[in-house]
Length: 53
Length: 392
Image 1 (tube, each protein chain N blue to C red):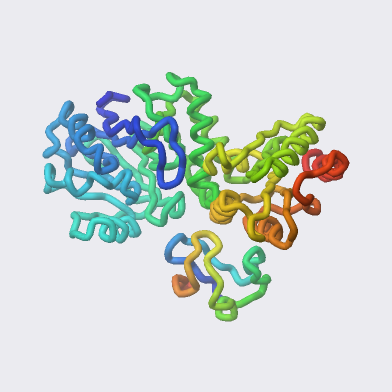
Image 2: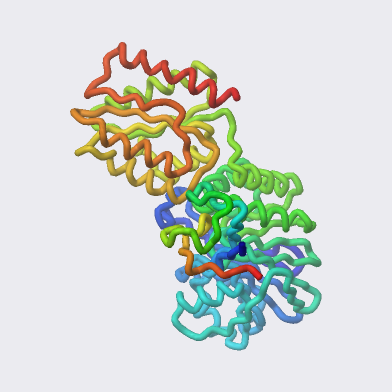
């Protein structure tokens, strides 16, 4: 599963960690995160994330 | 204008009359610090809020003709630092503005015009003769565009808003002012501006730990140049970034007929019976920006509100909105209040704290109209939970 990086603040979503505080359990692929989810650091939406090579 | 080191001058604007900074109360005013670095190619770090332009230019002119400035570093696009940039560029039209990639976007959005921008990334350097500058991007401390600039040959860090204080003074160095007052204002600044971004602050402090820093020049307030003051402000930032707190609590409330206030005062006595340092805040008389400073320093946050049409009072509601954005961590909470006929609205108070990251550790205490002496006695139920929060 790919990691995704927020282009605004640099936060990296790691699917292995998930974002438990944001209701996303570990092991959740980025594609499966609901569209309502926002970057836990700066608050922007999924559309501001890019896959990390 | 003031020489702070060989060929390094402070200039800028002291804002004696500022009393509110977008919702942050500033009874001590503020400063917008710009720094002029003389060299083969003179360089200016930041400008000032638009109305401080005359002071900024007078300070530069006392040292060199502004037209000689070759570079203006924009550490941060917010207008308290970029506000005089377009006007200053009229005096030095051949100068380049150095900023982060997000800074370039930010400056264009703010000023709606082409600017002579040169973007830098973390680790990039710039030599202007004897001086060698290194740039470090610090996204979300506290905006996406934020960066800091390090002067390698003098070991001076121009830290932008980091380590800053809203404190107007004719003094320029922390040790001249106390320095306790400087650390106190730095705490309020951190609590109101930087608190949500602790993880990023830690990343920045890690990067800076590798540098030898003899002087920290923030964009607001006084400069840190004594080794012990630099060590202290850095360790305070670590502490706050890690959401470490002392044996301390804050009780925050508002009141309509003094009932919620009576409860607040009784809870204060419960805290004091356990020798816990406690602040008692009524939002009618204390500004929310001071309330959140206390929250930052406290392990336990106890909040009370009366019910007004089944909602918390708007003062408390406003504070809850503010705290949700500031995202304090590792703190515990309790709630209390007086109601007239329905308690459902207290959920707003409980949920508001929980959504801010403050974990409730006891059921809320709510009484109808004026609490009886027996009911006030029953507030002692809270003592056990308080002990657990403070002593484990």
